[in-house]
Length: 164
Image (cartoon, rainbow, N blue to C red):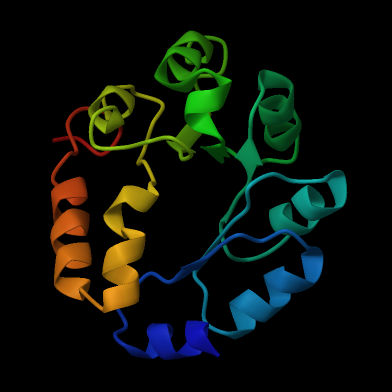
């Protein structure tokens, strides 16, 4: 299993698994060595299963009502997806005051041009984006480019919960 191979690379590697879309995937991912789980969204059954697992579960939400449903289950770290399509950094800034205990990882439309706007928000811990692994680089095996883009993305931390 790919998860097990990646987890063996080093004990400092925090291997996460996404996109979790079913309850059975949770157990398989954890057995394979996943230390956290990410989902693009969460049905009530998936959210409950994720809330009751030992590994952190980061479900995707696209609306305040969904965020409140996850909060009611004790889940405080959420993925905003698809971030740009549902309001992006402006949405997260607007909900920060009424939901100050929720932390987000926006994905979906996040790129180098808008990532810093997200990271400047106190309720954003990190961002995710596929710009760090361009399709051409993946197909050609240009993992040097992937590494460079990932390092540049990691260097974007300015403000937010992660500090500068």
